[in-house]
Image 1 (cartoon, rainbow, N blue to C red):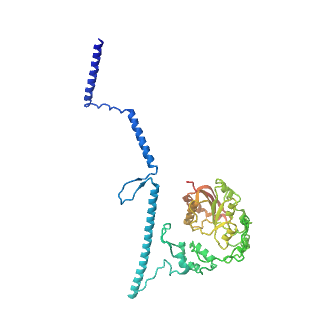
Image 2 (image 1 turned 30 degrees about the vertical axis):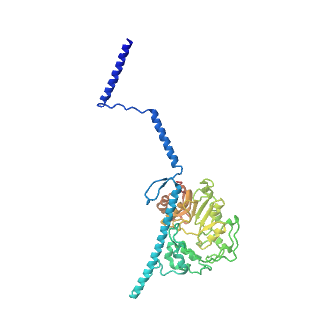
Image 3 (image 1 turned 180 degrees about the vertical axis):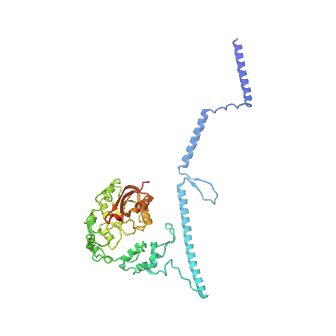
Length: 464
């Protein structure tokens, strides 16, 4: 009986298997069966093999091995991951480029020589046929420069030919563009005996610079030293000492000694640049010592606006006799002073105090790289006497030489009331300074009806 039941159960299982097989065939005409999933063990094994292969390839590539792409012989070889090979290819390319530039310079020289030869031949043919000679062109000069003037304005060919650093095979002397407008004065300035003493023409040099002929050309002569010259006083005593008169050649100036310059501050009348600058025991000694909360900022209050020790080097534009730089030096800050010898030896006076003078005009680009100064100060040098475009260019140049976070101290900027908001505030806003402190006040010494104003400001170059 048990066997019969067992056989019956087996028959039912066989029937179910047959039906399943028939159903599988029938499913081809209906829905597709769910595919069988691979065994999880096989999938994990495949993933492990892929990871191992990837790691092996990465180790090979970053171990410094050279992986080359096979290209035709005419194509340059490309090296992947091999920095030494890339450097060799780069050097070879640079050398080839330098050689091509040298060849170009040689071809240019040959073309110039051929051009000059052709001009000579044509001039000769013109003379045979009776043609009138054409006026020669001397680069904008009325006649061909000679002597030291020729040396100062014409290019000089490099002895070794084209140089990659210069990008040329010749050097041009540094000469202000406006010098062409004052050719007679420049020719007079360059009329000297080479190798001898320079003429006493300081006033001529200053006038040329003020007219825009800046920089002036170099000269091959020796300026005269003052008779009886003595060494300056040692630091720190020199900072507040009037130097001996024998440190200056007084011929170019109205005053013939420092006593005369000091007395200017104590006499009424007379129109002088920086009238009281040489009186180190008077008003000059009290400058920037106290902060009145208005137009008068003190050096200490300005330094407190920065992190301690971060104001280290700076520039004072139009600094007169260098008193601002003196006060900063007392606080371990090095400041270069721009000044001009306007009827007084300002540069020599600054140097005698143990400070660094720099003789440039407001039109000249500041001789500093971008972002190197911690502070720039200017008192009275920038005012409404400066053309708007020149002023804006000067402010952008100040912005350029300041480091991020550096400050520009605009000290007693003078203007008229209508100019302040209509002209100058928009200029300062365009430059991009951030205002740390801004104070505007009326200038009343000549009467309120004149509507004259001063502005003092502490402006920061943004960090980003």
